[in-house]
Length: 275
Image (cartoon, rainbow, N blue to C red):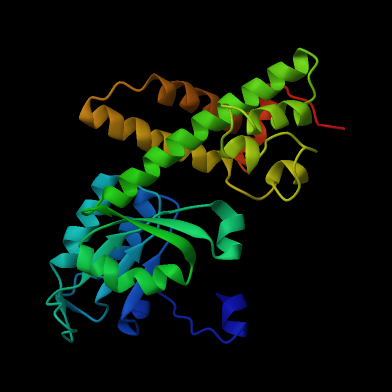
């Protein structure tokens, strides 16, 4: 807050004070409990009041769909201090993002959005100022559901790519050569051609800077826990979630929780740097 205040950005001490001076509020927080506290806590955005100023809330946190729907209902049960257009009540969109730190810095994020479609259309200019793509996923909680499924696929593909590249090294194929094969063959994926986990193969990705920056392993572990809980709730068989959970839990327990999730190549599969 101090850094942004020094840059001339208006700052407030509590979420409640932010809400008093805002028509649109955007939140992006680490976990479901943080989001609940910021919205419904003692000094939260809603603060138990019947009438609030913001007409639109956009939550870009990666949390479970159930919490998203609960908060969305709390928002819609409030009244607006000032009616805007055809909106009788405030609205919340769940709009988690994909793309990581690099896409955030380049304003090329993808937003997965759940909530009323008219609210989504009203919010699109805001989302497009921060990202390149926004996809409407349906009702409240569907954006959160899409993000959980995306991160499950991302974890599994990173594990598969890392396992293949480490095996290739053990069989005498350099990681750069095997990467070229993968990226021109059916094994190509984001983990191989845009976020390669082998140090020395690709510039500008976390593996090129000792796995610093990027998407922390502890956050991937959290998202896999969300996926597991959601799968259990709907009775969906998901063996790959369980295996990925096990691996990323081990990464965190061994002290790699702040390293980018691609560090599984080095710390789980014992892969070697490309010289």
